[in-house]
Image 1 (spheres, rainbow, N blue to C red):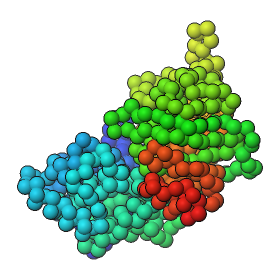
Image 2 (image 1 turned 180 degrees about the vertical axis):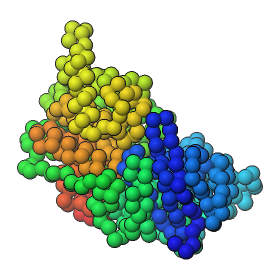
Image 3 (image 1 turned 90 degrees about the vertical axis):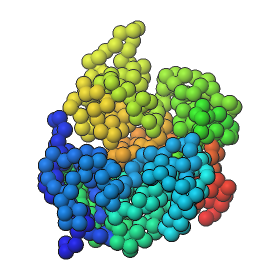
Image 4 (image 1 turned 180 degrees about the horizontal axis):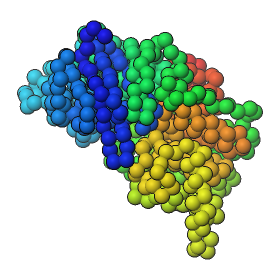
Length: 508
């Protein structure tokens, strides 16, 4: 490449017992949108943290405009012209947009900053409301704050980590238009994503990491999503097998007129939720984060106690006032979005975490006696069948990467052979190969007669899995529609605008 903005040469970074990055070379040209791809644990996060100054490399060189530099911390990265928008936003919810932007910049007159913010937002098509509080904003609006905050520092390179994971299709289109405009001005983008069709549509080049090494470079538009996935994981990716037959008449979950007050300060109350899940079907619930998904999961699992009104039946039994473990005894399992603290205990081993939700259903505990040999074998089965990468079944939950912990949690619930599985964000943070495997296991479970309720922000996942699709928006749920009768664009509109009715979606 004749002209290079950022060049990494021989970058190496190790942690105790792990080589995270091994002799990695990377070059990004001015005005280029460059994808960084790899499965969970491939070394992507470690690499971008070194570019942004959060970590220091053990060996190798970072060059900026063909001059060797030392990026000691994020402040020195920003001084060079490197900005980063992390997957998890660093915003204060009780402060306004303007106040959050001001915190990240040198002290200046707020009215001057307001004008700069408005001018920059308008220039790049990122509409913002300076005086609105962050807790009142959608995930897409919050992301715009992060991007504009970076742009006000005039970056030459913008690093984006999973930027579309919380966006509707319409918001994604707006983001892509912004990124293409930035590239046209000569700014570079380093783009990390598991959404390979988006990478194909947006990115000029891609660098692929596997096991801490750079294994390939390619032009994404000349690849398929499957070929990119196979480059990432080093083997063929099989699509989920799919299911034959239709939903049976037996109802696995019935929710009627459910209303719940959120226990969170800025949570979302549920209003008149109606929903059924039959044996042999998957019902998908789409929605932008913060629209009541957490409250719905907690209400169904029983963690928040009895609802304000309405009923929940698991099978033919009224479970409205049942405790979580009693609901599990009815044949239901639950996979919440929050891995650590809710789905798993960080300082317990994988074997101990296996026991937490399966003790009664799997018969591991009778008359106060625990069969640890049986629990241990169950944990071994999870690790093998779901390809969980850990040092062993005695590894602490907190020692696993996010993707591997997700595989463990999903596997723990599926291997209990439930009649009903309720899962939120089933493939959050996992790579393409693991996502396909999880989808396949959910479909196999449903083919055997279970019912599944899948709550996900990933529309590709919702459409890949679901027989019927509903949208949750501001605590209300649209009428589930057959997946073949709706489009991603129509569902995206309903995700972003609660005023639309289910009737509008079904006829869009």
